[in-house]
Amino acid sequence: MPMNFETVEVTTDLLIIGGGMGSCGAAVEAAYWGKKHGLKVTLVDKASMPRSGAVGMGLSAINLYVGLAEGNNTVQDYVRYVKTDMMGVARDDLVANIARHVDSSVHMFEKWGLPLWKDENGGYVHEGKWQLMISGESYKVIVAEAAKNALGEENIYERVFITEPLLKDGKCVGAVGFSVRENKIYVFKAKATLCAMGGTVGVFKPKSTGEGAGRSWYPPFSTGSSAYFTMKAGAEMTCQEVRFVPIRFKDAYGPVGAWFLLFKSRATNALGENYMETRADELKNWGKYGSAKPIPANLRNHLGLLDIKEGKGPLYMRTEEAIANLAKKYEDDAKAFKKKMKELENEAWEDFLDMTIAQALLWAATNVEPEVRSSEIAATEPYFISSHSGSSGAWVSGPEDLSAGTDYFWGYAQMTTVPALFAAGDATGACPHKFSSGTHAEGRIAAKSAIKYILENNTLTEADPAVIEAVKAEIVKPLEIFEAHSGFSTDPEVNPNYIMPKQFMYRLQKLMDEYVGGANVFFNMNEASLTRAAELFEFLKEDSQKLAARDLYELLRAWENKHRLWQAESHLRAVTFREETRWPGYYFRTDKPTLDEENWHCFVNMKWDPNTNEWSVFKKPVIDMFGVE
View 1 (cartoon, helix red, strand yellow):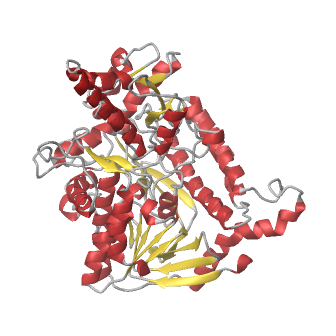
View 2 (cartoon, rainbow, N blue to C red):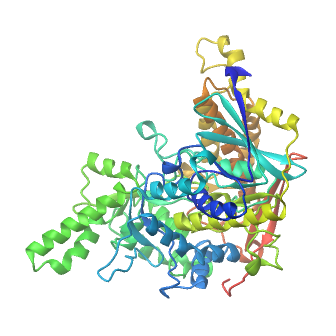
């Protein structure tokens, strides 16, 4: 084996894969129940938990707090909001289960030391109906510390990238990966495995290039590992056609939520027109979703994109107008007005310094003073994520009290269709809008369910040694390819015998951008472009077997691209299968440009069979459980 890799075997009861909010929630819950029953819980993370996952840089708001105890909202209210925002396609049971438990996660965060903004009466400061303002630069550090304390350092493996699931007779029995710092391959053997490795960035060509290369709204280190792991295990997947395209401050991808909800700002085109008003008639083309309040995120995108296509761009967030309006009532008192303006200016900058530092740097570099001038906003490239306004992920069982007797339940909450394989966060599909707090709560739900599964199925099943050896050989294959062929050419990056990770990534992004509805084609696609994409995809899949790596860093990049490739293929198959346009603003099937409620008010599910290497794509019904159609 090249580079003299050592094999490290770890046997545990529950294996948690990932270090983000879902895994941290899972760690706290699993440690509590596991210790009661003498079970060992192990967590493995590609990064370092205090800054791992989508919240790693920080966050300025908790975007899901139902407020059940305060009587502000109900679980049914939240299900209605989520389902409407997703144009009618979401799992009632999964969304409701998170909604009824999420407040307790928020209270945990506050107990652990997270500063939540308070009003003069000591209540939480709401950004919007479901959002709470926080000083969240250290949000993930605080949550990760609690998870680490619960598990114990001896049960945590950081800087280990999981590449493959281990299977035995259709059951997930562990995982294999490698250290990104040492020459070690890790073989984890477990009675149950919880997958929570984030969503996917880098499948589509990014809008930021050159000095901004790699800058994205969603974290660039989320590279499709959840989707890959569950698909390779043979799990049924759902909503792989649903990508998320957020509107963000241009180039540095700063979020816009606080400006819309807290500062009550408007977005306009370059002519000063509010496209949500001037394009209002377009909403009538999208049935009941177009008249919903709030208007679904993809439809808001759609109206702005129509202005851009018509040459009315760029789009702007009217920050100066919003700040002036908030300070207006202080105008008669010069001292109070000046103080209020300074306070609002500080809040505007803190919004980015808490969570998107690059945006604050870009504002400073381009002399943008939010209280003086507007700032550009734009649609990003597409991402695959189910914790925000997207739904792609594994098809998991709902809780027994909500889902029993339906196609949504098969024994253990949050378990995929593969026995002993559980999922949380961006790994689960059809339950969007859980954000950081809901993802933490979902991790807790999944962990408790996994512990229950272990107690009722308390036998360690091990993969065949030959299977493990084959996986280990596949892991280091990129190193062997480079070692065998690098001397063939004078430039090691140009070689007919292999392809380097960055070159492979560029090819994937170009293919997806041009033929599968990327930002450069205004998210448009049709049957002809998708057919061409499928043809080119076969060449790309062949070349994925020739990915080469010079060192551990490039070995990591090679495997990240292998993972992205599976997310990309599943998306291509799903958007080809769904013959309608349901999410304009996220993507537009130009040959199927309208909403078709009669035929396509359903889930698009799919499965890859590990035994036959074949895909199947099929429909699953959307079940109305709460009177929310």
